[in-house]
Image (tube, rainbow, N blue to C red):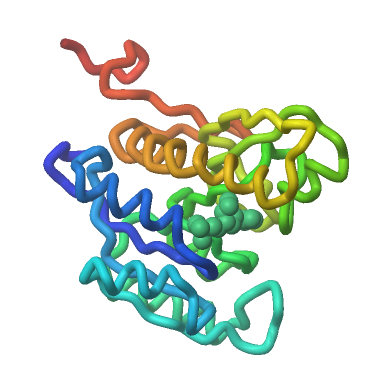
Length: 218
Ligand code: GAR
């Protein structure tokens, strides 16, 4: 990829949008060679839409249809169309609480990335910080992964640990996990966009421009 090219991002989120803010700030600061082309939400009052509009970025609510945990086929087609019309290169899930199906996966093969608030494969699904507390693990964390047709099951790109303290509540643990998310997600995306991604089986490997295996010299 031409190093001058800024990757065009489509960001999907259902919630308050703190990961989106971390990504948008990293783009603005030049730490992430990307720009947010479009923000989409399945929730009309989601904070992520306000955070995007405050920054002068395009943001739209797109109705998800009648299902609770996925987009209905017509809705998913509308998401694909909006992302393609915005000439999006990568789709970034930032707290998007619906399963992604074939139309989106086929439109952006190995170009959809998600952040999950646990060390996958532990605690997939909802409220992973609560799952971690209830299980009693001493370490949980954050995972950035490529999205496939499963639930939080795609090849892992980056992970970082978060210690569970004896006096943690769900709120305090999630707050510390989110601090780590806000560092890890932009950094992992920067590596994804500047390196060369190889996916072999479950293993996602990144060749950076400086790694000997990339075939480049100097
Ligand atoms: C984040 O903690 C993210 O990891 C989680 O939703 C939160 C969104 O927060 N995602 C999932 O649980 C996906 N399975 P945000 O709206 O402040 O970025």
